[in-house]
Amino acid sequence: MTEHKSGKDKTARLRRLAEEGGGEDTTEIARTLSKQEQELVHELRVHQIELEMQNEELRRTQHELECSRARYFDLYDLAPVGYLTLSGKGVIREANLAAATMLGVERSALVGQPISRLILKEDQELYSLHRKELLESGGPQDCELRMVKSDKSAFWVHLAASIEQCSATNPGCCDEDEPVVRVVLSDISDRKQAEKSLNELNEELGKRVAERTEEIREKDQILILQSRQAAMGEMISNIAHQWRQPLNALGLIIQQLFLFYDMGEFDRAYLENRVSQAMDLILHMSRTIDDFKGYLRPDKEKADFKLQTVLAGTLSLMEDSFRNQDIAIEVSTKSDPVIFGYRNEYAQVLLNVLNNARDVLLERKIVGAKVTINIFTEGGRAVVTISDNAGGVPGEIMGKIFDPYFTTKGPQAGTGVGLFMSKTIIEKNMGGRLSVRNIGEGAEFRIEV
Image 1: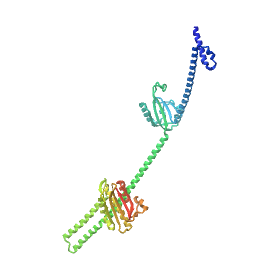
Image 2: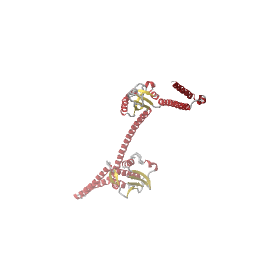
Image 3: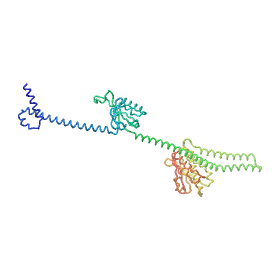
Image 4: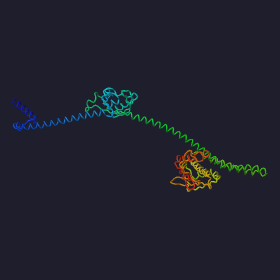
């Protein structure tokens, strides 16, 4: 009993010495202690210092945690997006200041009410589908819908949600056995307004493009009609030239019938001979009509055709017109290329360019008028050049010569669509190129396909 009391007294005395530490001079006291007691005092002092260091570390850690917690709440509350924590049933448990500001209500007023009450009525079905996919997949889901502020005004948000399951490592995250839903709200009203404005602009632009396209289509139809009318006028003119001599010959045959009858030399042999001549002339005129009809008929499909053959056919329709106007035609062929395209349209281009050359030569009253045609192949393309000696195209109109309705012949002599339609046929319909330049004594038109 006495020894036990003595041990307790000694322990108390040693604890007092350790607690006092350097608070008083314990050297003399330490000298009265045994070696074992001195070691025990040293161990107690070391332990005391360790505890003090641990306490200091704990205090510093607690301070850092408090600072981090304060920073976290600042970031949480002042974030540029809204944060909501929902129960598994969609009831709001927590909300940051950004979410409350976004919705125009006090934060405390948000807690406890279902988020569905804040969704615009028209978008309730969209939110229900989003919530169903979230709960079924268990993974993050997002959607865009409209929410309602306290003043009943609606605004667009991007809603991103994820599920946090309750677990032993995260106790107290929910009051009942259901998942916790974390929601991030981003106000996208400005973006939606921009998209709406852009869509309206696109619709208006589409409408204008459609209207403009229709206007261009109508103008193209008018140009095509005028081109055809101009071509028909040229055809009629060429037919007149082609028919003039046969008609004169036919008239002479008819007149000779009466003359030979009156002279008493009218017999069956003579009549048969004259009828045969007349029929030949009529057949020739009929073939001329067929030839012109073929050139006026548009092709429906592309096909291969020989360039020399088309040129020869075109010249046959115009030779009388050129001969009667004392215009010589020279043709030089270095090859006979085959073109894949629209035969009759190509022939129409040749006809337009040749008619243009003829008209310029006549307008300028050129002595020794001549048109030179060259056919050759260059770079895998069939090339035709048609040149005249009429002095060339004036520089001020060189860039306008293929424009629609541009003509130097005056309103009574030209429509200004022939060369325009020729360029359209070659470049748009057949993927070629039609150009003009001045060379030597006149102008040269170059057709490449």
